[in-house]
Length: 209
Ligand SMILES: C[S@@+](CC[C@H](N)C(=O)[O-])C[C@H]1O[C@@H](n2cnc3c(N)ncnc32)[C@H](O)[C@@H]1O
Image 1: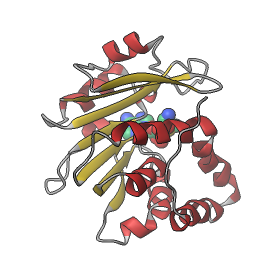
Image 2: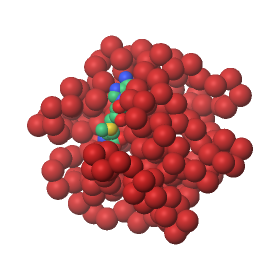
Image 3: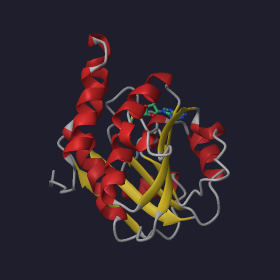
Image 4: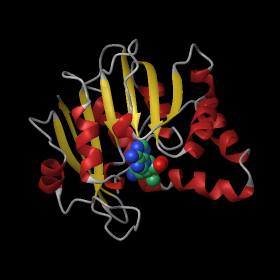
Protein backbone atom coordinates (compact mmCIF):
# COMPACT_ATOMS: atom_id res chain seq x y z
CA UNK A 1 0.00 0.00 0.00
CA UNK A 2 1.51 3.32 -1.05
CA UNK A 3 1.05 6.14 1.43
CA UNK A 4 -1.13 9.08 0.36
CA UNK A 5 -0.13 12.44 1.77
CA UNK A 6 -2.77 15.03 2.71
CA UNK A 7 -3.15 18.13 4.87
CA UNK A 8 -4.83 17.49 8.24
CA UNK A 9 -5.08 20.34 10.72
CA UNK A 10 -4.90 19.70 14.43
CA UNK A 11 -8.31 21.23 15.21
CA UNK A 12 -10.04 18.80 12.85
CA UNK A 13 -8.03 15.89 14.20
CA UNK A 14 -9.11 16.78 17.75
CA UNK A 15 -12.75 16.60 16.64
CA UNK A 16 -12.20 13.12 15.15
CA UNK A 17 -10.85 11.84 18.44
CA UNK A 18 -13.40 13.67 20.59
CA UNK A 19 -16.25 12.21 18.54
CA UNK A 20 -14.86 8.69 19.04
CA UNK A 21 -13.82 9.20 22.69
CA UNK A 22 -17.29 10.44 23.69
CA UNK A 23 -19.07 7.34 22.39
CA UNK A 24 -20.24 4.63 24.81
CA UNK A 25 -17.67 1.81 25.13
CA UNK A 26 -19.63 -0.62 22.96
CA UNK A 27 -19.85 1.89 20.07
CA UNK A 28 -16.25 3.07 20.11
CA UNK A 29 -14.84 -0.02 18.37
CA UNK A 30 -17.52 0.35 15.73
CA UNK A 31 -16.43 3.92 14.96
CA UNK A 32 -12.79 2.86 14.92
CA UNK A 33 -13.56 0.52 11.99
CA UNK A 34 -13.59 3.65 9.83
CA UNK A 35 -9.99 4.38 10.79
CA UNK A 36 -8.27 1.23 9.49
CA UNK A 37 -5.32 2.13 7.27
CA UNK A 38 -7.06 0.85 4.11
CA UNK A 39 -10.09 3.08 4.79
CA UNK A 40 -8.06 6.23 5.47
CA UNK A 41 -5.65 5.67 2.57
CA UNK A 42 -8.54 5.03 0.17
CA UNK A 43 -10.16 8.31 1.18
CA UNK A 44 -6.88 10.20 0.90
CA UNK A 45 -6.43 8.63 -2.56
CA UNK A 46 -9.89 9.89 -3.54
CA UNK A 47 -9.17 13.43 -2.31
CA UNK A 48 -5.80 13.52 -4.11
CA UNK A 49 -7.38 12.32 -7.38
CA UNK A 50 -10.09 15.01 -7.08
CA UNK A 51 -7.59 17.84 -6.51
CA UNK A 52 -6.83 18.58 -10.19
CA UNK A 53 -10.53 18.17 -11.12
CA UNK A 54 -12.09 20.40 -8.46
CA UNK A 55 -10.62 23.87 -8.89
CA UNK A 56 -13.62 26.09 -8.13
CA UNK A 57 -15.79 26.23 -4.99
CA UNK A 58 -18.11 23.22 -5.12
CA UNK A 59 -20.77 21.37 -3.15
CA UNK A 60 -20.61 17.63 -2.58
CA UNK A 61 -22.99 14.82 -1.65
CA UNK A 62 -21.42 11.70 -0.12
CA UNK A 63 -23.56 8.55 -0.11
CA UNK A 64 -22.79 5.83 2.43
CA UNK A 65 -20.98 8.65 4.26
CA UNK A 66 -20.46 6.56 7.43
CA UNK A 67 -18.91 8.66 10.25
CA UNK A 68 -17.96 11.59 8.00
CA UNK A 69 -14.18 11.18 7.73
CA UNK A 70 -14.11 11.61 3.95
CA UNK A 71 -16.14 14.81 4.23
CA UNK A 72 -13.68 16.14 6.79
CA UNK A 73 -10.65 15.39 4.59
CA UNK A 74 -12.39 17.08 1.65
CA UNK A 75 -13.05 20.27 3.65
CA UNK A 76 -9.38 20.42 4.54
CA UNK A 77 -7.94 19.77 1.09
CA UNK A 78 -10.42 20.87 -1.60
CA UNK A 79 -12.38 24.07 -2.38
CA UNK A 80 -15.62 22.81 -0.83
CA UNK A 81 -18.61 24.96 0.12
CA UNK A 82 -21.09 22.44 1.59
CA UNK A 83 -21.29 18.67 2.05
CA UNK A 84 -24.33 16.51 2.70
CA UNK A 85 -23.39 13.04 3.97
CA UNK A 86 -26.16 10.48 3.51
CA UNK A 87 -26.22 7.12 5.28
CA UNK A 88 -29.00 4.60 5.84
CA UNK A 89 -27.78 3.85 9.39
CA UNK A 90 -29.18 6.37 11.93
CA UNK A 91 -26.22 5.69 14.26
CA UNK A 92 -23.91 7.42 11.77
CA UNK A 93 -25.71 10.77 11.88
CA UNK A 94 -24.65 12.08 15.28
CA UNK A 95 -21.12 10.67 15.00
CA UNK A 96 -20.54 12.24 11.57
CA UNK A 97 -21.97 15.56 12.80
CA UNK A 98 -19.60 15.45 15.79
CA UNK A 99 -16.56 14.65 13.61
CA UNK A 100 -17.45 17.65 11.44
CA UNK A 101 -18.72 19.94 14.23
CA UNK A 102 -16.77 23.07 13.17
CA UNK A 103 -18.24 22.77 9.65
CA UNK A 104 -21.74 21.98 10.91
CA UNK A 105 -21.63 25.06 13.14
CA UNK A 106 -20.41 27.25 10.27
CA UNK A 107 -23.73 27.88 8.52
CA UNK A 108 -24.41 24.14 8.07
CA UNK A 109 -21.50 23.60 5.72
CA UNK A 110 -21.76 19.97 6.85
CA UNK A 111 -24.81 17.90 7.72
CA UNK A 112 -25.24 14.18 8.01
CA UNK A 113 -28.64 12.81 6.97
CA UNK A 114 -30.22 9.41 7.60
CA UNK A 115 -31.71 8.08 4.37
CA UNK A 116 -31.49 5.19 1.93
CA UNK A 117 -29.40 6.56 -0.93
CA UNK A 118 -31.87 5.38 -3.55
CA UNK A 119 -34.64 7.49 -1.98
CA UNK A 120 -32.64 10.64 -1.33
CA UNK A 121 -34.03 13.89 -2.79
CA UNK A 122 -31.28 16.41 -3.50
CA UNK A 123 -31.43 19.71 -1.63
CA UNK A 124 -32.74 22.32 -4.07
CA UNK A 125 -30.36 25.07 -2.94
CA UNK A 126 -27.17 22.95 -2.72
CA UNK A 127 -25.97 22.14 -6.23
CA UNK A 128 -24.78 18.57 -6.74
CA UNK A 129 -21.41 19.50 -8.24
CA UNK A 130 -19.75 16.35 -6.86
CA UNK A 131 -21.61 13.11 -6.08
CA UNK A 132 -19.63 10.42 -4.25
CA UNK A 133 -20.36 6.81 -3.38
CA UNK A 134 -17.57 4.94 -1.60
CA UNK A 135 -19.95 2.20 -0.43
CA UNK A 136 -20.87 0.68 -3.79
CA UNK A 137 -19.89 -2.79 -2.54
CA UNK A 138 -22.51 -2.51 0.24
CA UNK A 139 -25.59 -2.06 -1.98
CA UNK A 140 -27.40 -4.31 -4.44
CA UNK A 141 -27.52 -3.54 -8.15
CA UNK A 142 -31.06 -2.20 -8.09
CA UNK A 143 -30.19 0.27 -5.28
CA UNK A 144 -27.15 1.39 -7.28
CA UNK A 145 -29.19 1.83 -10.47
CA UNK A 146 -31.92 3.81 -8.68
CA UNK A 147 -29.28 5.99 -6.96
CA UNK A 148 -27.45 6.53 -10.26
CA UNK A 149 -30.63 7.48 -12.17
CA UNK A 150 -31.31 10.33 -9.75
CA UNK A 151 -27.91 11.98 -10.21
CA UNK A 152 -28.27 15.24 -12.11
CA UNK A 153 -26.78 15.63 -15.57
CA UNK A 154 -23.30 17.23 -15.41
CA UNK A 155 -22.49 16.18 -11.82
CA UNK A 156 -18.96 14.91 -11.27
CA UNK A 157 -19.43 11.31 -10.07
CA UNK A 158 -16.90 9.46 -7.90
CA UNK A 159 -17.48 5.78 -7.12
CA UNK A 160 -15.26 3.42 -5.16
CA UNK A 161 -15.65 -0.35 -4.77
CA UNK A 162 -13.36 -3.28 -4.08
CA UNK A 163 -12.61 -6.99 -4.53
CA UNK A 164 -12.94 -7.82 -0.81
CA UNK A 165 -15.41 -10.70 -1.34
CA UNK A 166 -14.55 -12.26 2.05
CA UNK A 167 -16.36 -9.55 4.04
CA UNK A 168 -19.96 -10.73 4.56
CA UNK A 169 -21.29 -7.14 4.33
CA UNK A 170 -19.94 -6.83 0.79
CA UNK A 171 -22.71 -7.91 -1.57
CA UNK A 172 -21.48 -6.23 -4.77
CA UNK A 173 -17.71 -6.61 -5.19
CA UNK A 174 -15.84 -6.44 -8.49
CA UNK A 175 -13.28 -8.92 -9.81
CA UNK A 176 -11.13 -6.25 -11.49
CA UNK A 177 -11.22 -2.64 -12.72
CA UNK A 178 -13.00 -3.56 -15.94
CA UNK A 179 -15.73 -5.41 -14.03
CA UNK A 180 -16.00 -2.44 -11.63
CA UNK A 181 -16.47 0.03 -14.52
CA UNK A 182 -19.11 -2.15 -16.19
CA UNK A 183 -21.24 -2.68 -13.09
CA UNK A 184 -21.14 1.02 -12.16
CA UNK A 185 -22.07 2.52 -15.57
CA UNK A 186 -18.71 4.30 -15.84
CA UNK A 187 -18.62 6.24 -19.09
CA UNK A 188 -15.63 8.15 -20.47
CA UNK A 189 -13.80 8.34 -17.11
CA UNK A 190 -11.65 11.35 -16.25
CA UNK A 191 -9.89 8.95 -13.89
CA UNK A 192 -10.07 5.19 -13.38
CA UNK A 193 -7.60 3.25 -11.29
CA UNK A 194 -6.88 0.84 -8.49
CA UNK A 195 -5.25 1.10 -5.10
CA UNK A 196 -3.77 -1.94 -3.40
CA UNK A 197 -4.23 -2.20 0.36
CA UNK A 198 -2.86 -5.01 2.53
CA UNK A 199 -6.13 -6.98 2.32
CA UNK A 200 -7.86 -6.03 -0.92
CA UNK A 201 -7.77 -3.81 -4.01
CA UNK A 202 -9.92 -0.69 -4.11
CA UNK A 203 -11.22 0.54 -7.48
CA UNK A 204 -12.25 4.11 -8.27
CA UNK A 205 -13.66 5.92 -11.29
CA UNK A 206 -14.43 9.61 -11.71
CA UNK A 207 -16.59 10.76 -14.58
CA UNK A 208 -19.17 13.35 -15.54
CA UNK A 209 -22.78 12.29 -16.02
C1 LIG B 1 -18.78 0.16 6.03
S1 LIG B 1 -19.29 1.69 5.46
C2 LIG B 1 -18.17 2.33 4.28
C3 LIG B 1 -17.45 1.42 3.39
C4 LIG B 1 -16.62 2.07 2.33
N1 LIG B 1 -15.56 1.18 2.03
C5 LIG B 1 -16.06 3.42 2.71
O1 LIG B 1 -14.97 3.50 3.20
O2 LIG B 1 -16.75 4.42 2.52
C6 LIG B 1 -20.67 1.40 4.42
C7 LIG B 1 -21.73 2.39 4.75
O3 LIG B 1 -22.75 2.33 3.74
C8 LIG B 1 -23.98 2.53 4.38
N2 LIG B 1 -25.07 2.07 3.50
C9 LIG B 1 -25.34 0.79 3.13
N3 LIG B 1 -26.44 0.76 2.32
C10 LIG B 1 -26.83 2.06 2.17
C11 LIG B 1 -27.91 2.67 1.47
N4 LIG B 1 -28.78 1.95 0.77
N5 LIG B 1 -28.04 4.02 1.55
C12 LIG B 1 -27.16 4.76 2.29
N6 LIG B 1 -26.13 4.22 2.97
C13 LIG B 1 -25.96 2.88 2.92
C14 LIG B 1 -23.85 1.74 5.67
O4 LIG B 1 -24.80 2.12 6.64
C15 LIG B 1 -22.40 2.08 6.08
O5 LIG B 1 -22.33 3.20 6.94
